[in-house]
Length: 280
Image 1 (cartoon, one colour):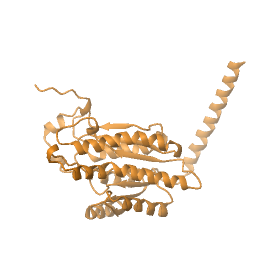
Image 2 (image 1 turned 60 degrees about the horizontal axis):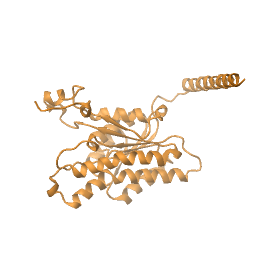
Image 3 (image 1 turned 90 degrees about the vertical axis):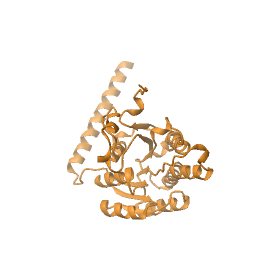
Image 4 (image 1 turned 135 degrees about the vertical axis):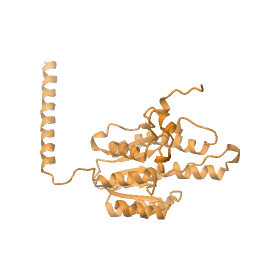
């Protein structure tokens, strides 16, 4: 009798699943909306480099996109070429960053996707690195991840009806697990991003927000054609990375069906961190 009960329950589940899939398939056919994510997206550091590629990629997905950056000239140009909304903000100024998000909440009602992309890399010998420089790197690369995530959580808690969809993606670096001399501030900030990502995952699960990180390796933002053959060939993938490689991964993580990827740091480095290197 127990086996029959389980079989009946499974058959009922399969019937409901089939009906759900058919109804959604019919709804997609009837919908006149073009394909795309159609989400509300906020990106920090979107004026150039990987951030600009992210702004462009999400705009092409027919999302409402806003971004902030300290570089007003580059930010305005990116906004003009992508149709995104630009906020001139120094993310080290916590109040300015929060005000930016408050404005978007007021205008959009909510933010579906937050991508913490902003980052600076300043390498100098340990004995020549000031405490103020170390603090500046952490205030730029790490603290904004906490600020934007906290602000999103506060807003989601205030909504009369819960938003069943949410994504936070944090740009980490392969330097969270490997280093070279003079990289203390950058390594510490990216190690913090790595750990903060899985902590936020646990804290935000009840709000239906997944939190993941991407750890890029060598991503060439400018003058890609000037790279040497050996720059490319040292990578198992046979080439140096491009900003678009990171943007495509973010689009993938933000697809609604990929909500089972959570609390992870995905390395995108052409295989370099898995390559054994010996001096010959």
